[in-house]
Image (cartoon, rainbow, N blue to C red; front, side, top):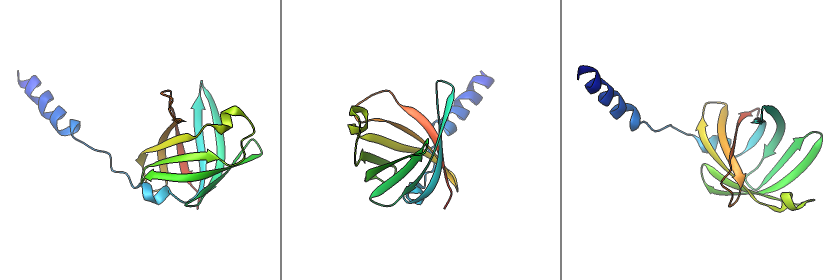
Length: 123
């Protein structure tokens, strides 16, 4: 019973813990990002202003319009889509922040399957 009471007390204090996020620190700037999908790591660099994100991946440059839903969630719309996949908007949610990084999850708008990644602020 003593152990059970200790467990309940621990659960009470950790169950209500909310991660502190400072998403506004990552709404603009230059970043480096890593995403792992099926064991393969994908890296990119991007610069984001309040309205625009320019990303370089595999020596290919993509530009997207940026629309913040709230301080921690954003929608990206590709400016010049070259395929049906690029026509779909992407929803990104910042989950956790540190002083120079944020962990995020993203998916195409309306899809349930989500991927996670980490971005590091360079400037």
